[in-house]
Length: 310
Image (cartoon, rainbow, N blue to C red; front, side, top):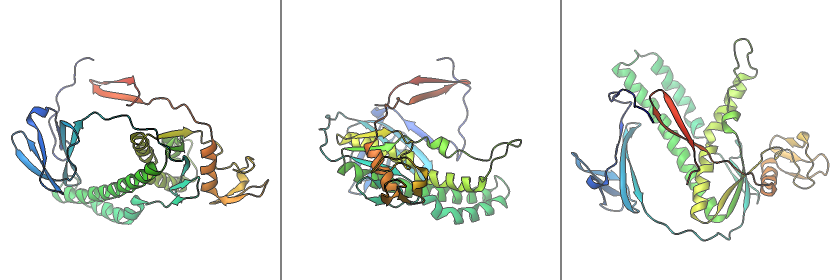
């Protein structure tokens, strides 16, 4: 692998994270339903808010600081049996912005828009930050307020996605979704100086709304939660799913008008996202390639290996 780079000293507020990998000197116990405690070398027992019991053999504890609070991530190892194959019904799911998730059975889930809820207050706090001397004490305090706003939105988004993905995984054996290229969909339209883009402000607002939904995180949650229950998450080709009539199969972009779908050939009427979800449910499954895992940086080079996640 080569030699590592020169050691870099720890910096306050930047490297507030450390991992204790030796389980010999670590312990975890529950104090009551809502409290627990971990034993850290040289510090002793530290109380924490946590009601989950240890699920197996303790392996490591990672302690990090985020948004003015300290968090402990406890990793354990255990053996689990293969889940039974689920016999629940399958469903197609269309992800969107106006409607976060539409199912082929007609169910719709509204978006949370966690970032939109803090956008105005965030802009006000960022204006305050711009008027302070950089890296001063008051600048650090104001920066911490902005960080807490971002953490609040991220926690709300994660909580919403966890609850929704658990509900869907408990009631379905197979969920089909589109294989979306989210990075390309949210790419900036600004362009370059010699070739500037068009409708940059509208595209920027659309990109912000796409990233606010957390589509990628939602797919990851569905994948492992379905696998734990004997189900499966399947990807389909997203081409023309929103322009195809679910009744006659005719593809026509004029059939979709906003959130309303009316086929120009057979006259079939439906909600556009519900129609797309039904097309997704009937579409052919894609053979998804395993993702590439990036190893730690060694010197100035980055080593990669191709491996499928377990």
